[in-house]
Amino acid sequence: MDWHTLPSLTSLRAFAAAAEYRNLTKAAAALNVTHSAISQQIRGLERRLGTRLVTRTQHGISLTSQGEHLSKGVLEAFAAMAALTETLSNAETMRPILVSATPMFASAFLMPRLSGYMDNNPNIELRIESTIEAVDLKPGGVDLAIRYGTGHWPGLQSQLLLPGCLTVVAARELIGDRTFSDPSDLLDFPLLQEHASVEFDLWLEKVGISPSAKRKVIRLPGNMLLDGIRRGDGIGATVPAFISDELKSGKLVALFDDPIPEIGYYLATLPGTCRPALVHFMRWLSQSTTEYEKTLYRWKTAHLL
Image (cartoon, rainbow, N blue to C red; front, side):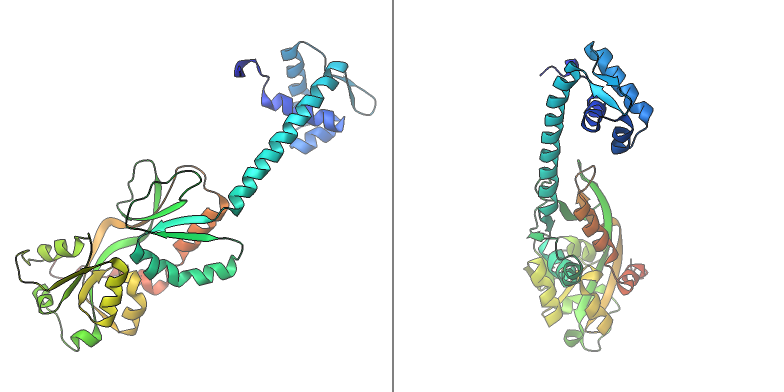
């Protein structure tokens, strides 16, 4: 198709509306433009085609034979376009929101909050993909990726959800009334660490514990890490929002904490306009952090750091 030979869509739309209503004032109201704008567009189309399309009458307009011929095809084309775009819009509205998140984030932060969201949004279907992989976002695929990092991923736009803060925690049942004045005290207990994560290792090295120091380390998946910490299987490090209920109740005790600048959990999407259901879900998720959880990120850096 030679697109250069086509008249402007705006002029064809103005003519189609005028042909449908046989009245320029009604056509202008339907398109939410002025009467003069409709007239100008039709005159421009007539100049473009080199023929008269409409004539004025006492009560509106009438179409010339050329106008009648053009109006039939144009109105059919616009009707087909309207049906097609409505079908696509409805399909997007009905398509589930596909969210990709790590197993730890999904089980510890997202799932405990979702019942409240679904109660207020029963017509929205969510699908949660739990994976440690950084999935690709494509139109019609994953709508939202909740990623841990700096928020800078090529080809994506992101907004911070949870600031980074490495918090070393233990079950009160495991440590009793013992106080921890030095990170080396942690070596008296099993250390629970997530597969493929080096943050706890880096923090231990940062506070002076050599990688060669004798440790009792258990590595396990992220969602199992939290269960192990809660049971008292060992001491671990995690994001405070994931264990806020246990911290608040005193079942878990924060032994050391270290805010991590510019690192955190981000909501990552494709650039451009997001569909309304996704915007609504992201807004809800951003507002779902409790006031207590927000206070957990205002702790002062541990005195040893």
